[in-house]
Length: 83
Image (cartoon, rainbow, N blue to C red; front, side, top):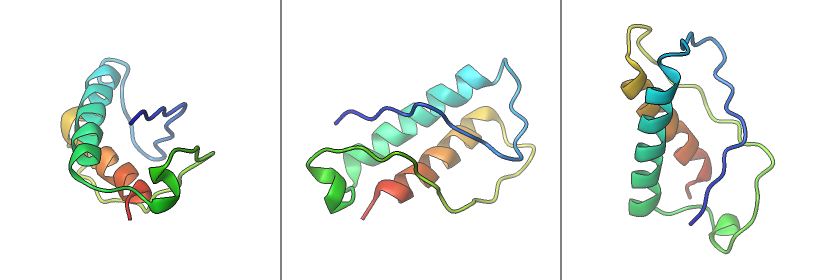
């Protein structure tokens, strides 16, 4: 499976430049794990593109570090792709 996220908009989250690579790595690892273990929607299983994906919001602790935040974002993206 190949997944390309062109742009990620994080409204209301202050992620500094030094935290972005850590957040990205954590999100990528967690999303890969979720996709490997779970299932995606039938309309995407055979391939295809989704021009945009709006996820339901999630609660986060503003003191959460970039690793925890990356995992939470991955979970929200996965729920948008899952069955």
